Length: 180
Image 1 (cartoon, rainbow, N blue to C red):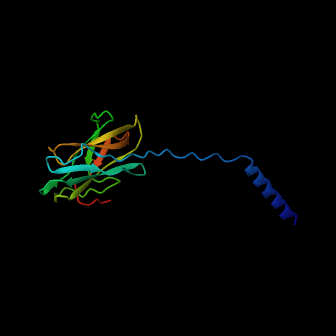
Image 2 (image 1 turned 90 degrees about the horizontal axis):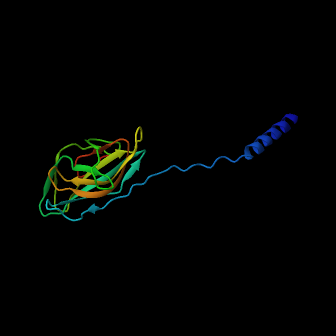
Image 3 (image 1 turned 135 degrees about the horizontal axis):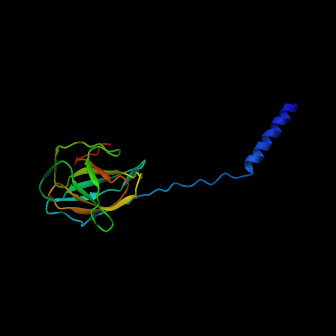
């Protein structure tokens, strides 16, 4: 009985001691949520296509935006390979960013194959990057220019790209479906 009383008193003392100092309030993580961007200028280009973007998706420090090419013309258009993309800063000046073709954390590259898109049809490509910060100052782009193929006119799309210090974008080839 005495042992039980000592155990209860010791437990009470520990409970009271534990309550005397409240635990520190948890610090919420800082989360940056990029926004989606409309095509600027909007409309069908002379090549019979237009490109738009969806919202930026984020996962574990990785980011991606889906580019959608729509055939707004009257004839089928065949594309083989990757869109041409450039990253611009908030002053619309080109940034020194490496663009790699291939698979990333966010999307699997289907590889190069001729893709014919009928009027009203679409093709997709994924632009992805990592928001990794190591040595140096983080960089952020504000726009992506996209040309459906080399030599085609560019369209400027508003896309917040928080690159960290990676200086790299990864791009998948045009394809009717996204593989991830």
